[in-house]
Image (cartoon, rainbow, N blue to C red; front, side, top):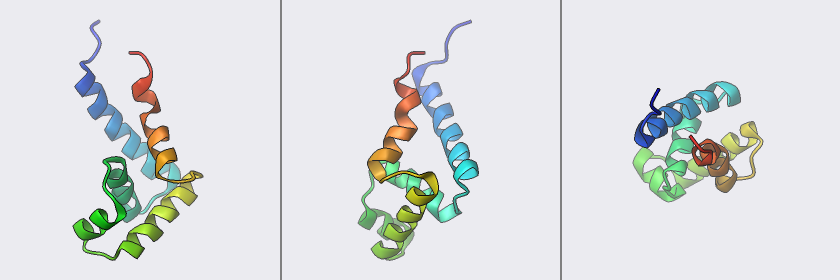
Length: 89
C-alpha cells in the first residue's frame, strides 16, 4: 500500500490536531480559532484585527488555551502540534 502524499498527511494531521485539541483541552470556539491562527504565524494584533476584538482579548484567550493545555506559550503549542509531522512516514 502506497503512503499518502505529504500534503494529504498534513491536511489530515491538521484536522486531527484541531479535533484532538478542542476535545482534550476543552477549548472554547474562540480559543480554538486563536490557537489555529497562532500556529499559522499570526501575531496577537493581527488576530485581533481579523476577529474584530481587542489585542487584550486575544492575549487572554491565548493564555486560557495555554493554561488548559498545560503549555508555556506559542512555541510550546507549535512544538506540540508539529511533532508528528517530523516523524518519518
